[in-house]
Length: 255
Ligand SMILES: NC(=O)C1=CN([C@@H]2O[C@H](COP(=O)(O)OP(=O)(O)OC[C@H]3O[C@@H](n4cnc5c(N)ncnc54)[C@H](OP(=O)(O)O)[C@@H]3O)[C@@H](O)[C@H]2O)C=CC1
Ligand SMILES: Nc1nc2c(c(=O)[nH]1)N=C([C@H](O)[C@@H](O)CO)CN2
Image (cartoon, rainbow, N blue to C red):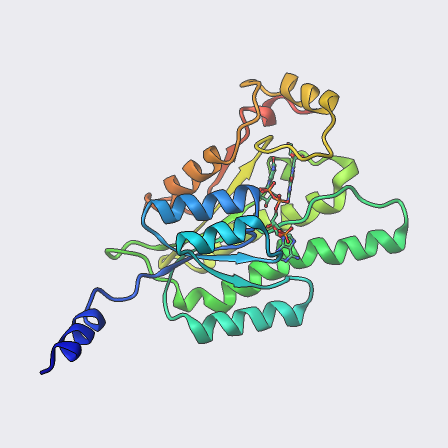
């Protein structure tokens, strides 16, 4: 056998392709951090994004596989699932991080449009991706695979100004509970409920200070605590139907 064929056969006989960890909304902030840290910890990450950001370029430069989709309609989500099934055989985990966030518009027609936006991103996309890929999810060493929903601590104590956002995040929380029952014992389904982890430019100094006064640990958490919670779920084979609040205790004191 020639040297070239030997080399090719050696490469092709290397360990089987690693199972993918799909992270949605990985173009910026928490999702980008999750994708980077999972890659650094040796997982084979498939980073989903909508906007081509600098973060996406960083992921590509790190050798992280990326896939683009906008979860803005039933058809776009179904097309994304079909593409995933065509291109990938095996997944280790799916992390639903993609999310929109803005207050409800006073105009009813605008609020209706917002409802669709939130519903597609927070409920239809996670459900269709889970249901469309659950047979491709496989754990390691006979342990269950993972689905993780990134929700919000406010699912049980919502903020009126963000009522549609909160309603659809509550739906994502309930979906975690039902799928934990539906997909057992092959798949664990859990949630991470962040609190004040990363402010946005829309948060004034006053709003930030008020939030910190309502937060027992009195700090903006950052993205790393969310990753540490993700990691703890991935390595624990006996957790399902659980929601981990990553909020510095804010849920205890928020009005
Ligand atoms: N930041 C915080 O303090 C808190 C965050 N959370 C939750 O944690 C998660 C991460 O938060 P954070 O990083 O701040 O989120 P961001 O709002 O900063 O980013 C959300 C990501 O989702 C993507 N996305 C939004 N809509 C769609 C869509 N229709 N199709 C595809 N992708 C979409 C965005 O893509 P694009 O780049 O195109 O905008 C972006 O990559 C979210 O689920 C959020 O709800 C909960 C409570 C507090
Ligand atoms: N998709 C997003 N969801 C949420 C965000 C965000 O920036 N994007 N931010 C919050 C909080 O207001 C946070 O910024 C402070 O607690 C909630 N959800």
